[in-house]
Amino acid sequence: MILWSDMLASRAIIAVVAGALLGCTASAPPAAVAQAIVNGSADNDDPNIVALMSNGAFTCTAEVISPHVILTAGHCSVAPAGTAYSVYFGNDVHVAGRTIAVTEIHADPGYRPDVVDAAHDLAIAILAEPAAVAPLSYNRVPIPDSWNDPRRPHGARLVGFGLASPSDGTSYGARRQTGLPIVGLRPEAITYSNHGFSGTCFGDSGGPAIARIAGNEAIISVTSYGFGSIVNACDLSHGDVEARVDTYHAFIDEWVTRVDPPARQGQLGDACDTNLDCASAICGSSDDGKTRFCTATCDPSASGVCGTLSCTSVDDIHVCMPGGCDLAAGGAPSNAGLVLIALALVAVRARRRRASAPICSIHESAG
Image (cartoon, rainbow, N blue to C red; front, side, top):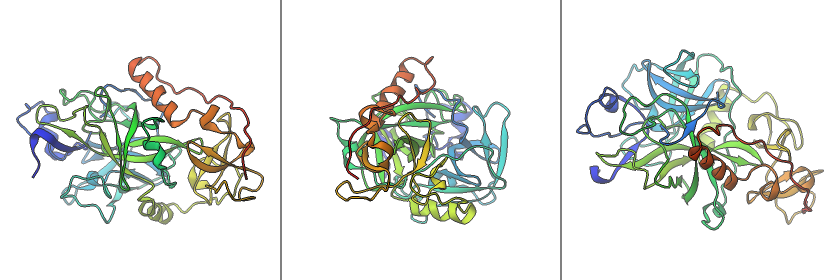
């Protein structure tokens, strides 16, 4: 039984929360709803992060992962029969933008709508026509346990269209972002600390947490739920819980391959734009962040596994990189650096753009 004094609140705005959006009082429990970034900053630089609409009303956050495929949370797909889904492209759902109809939506087969949990809380929506934005890569590489080491903090950039203020049911609709550190890793979920001042809220469900994998941004988890109460449905003192993408990538891969078969199967070192371009499903970034190329995970104790590239540790994940440049040491911002950058965005909202990746020095590496 859910206690309202310590309620698990899913982050989607659905029919249950409609009353709150119309300005009703806290007497209506905010159960099973979607979430927005509280105390975050405006994000006008991620056109592939979109708003999922149901019957024309904003419901959840989602992201374009291939021309016709949208990734969101499993609980965002739970709706009465006949519900018409669509996807809004733009920075604010209150401003005119392009909308594409969704022809079908599917939750992960293991998702249980009767349980508030991040396990299998993923869904795929199929667009009636291709999105006119570059897809966002999603991660297939197992996240190392070291990312949960408080002595060496790692984190991610979380993005969503949800409530900017838990006390204002009309404050949803603008795409916002924040940076949060990882404080918990489970096989099915990642928990992020929100430091008591920033985090997800209703409407952010389905939104991505983005970190660098092989120096390139990729979705590592999707907003599932947070902790709240009848007084504060978006409690910022208990953290945000998200469904891991690497654990459930087979479900995502199935739909992407079925709907948008990869046109390119790049090999190590070949140019790429997203993970979809590479046979290894990993598109990495060069030292200065200007060049992207297909890479792969590797064993540093083995020889010759990377061909002309070098087996290098990038944020504790060994991948094939040119020149053995350790990005975590001095190149493109590490995921710990992303947290600091994004937290600076929260503290000083005028600083809204991410810093360019500096050129890092070359390091010797096995491979």
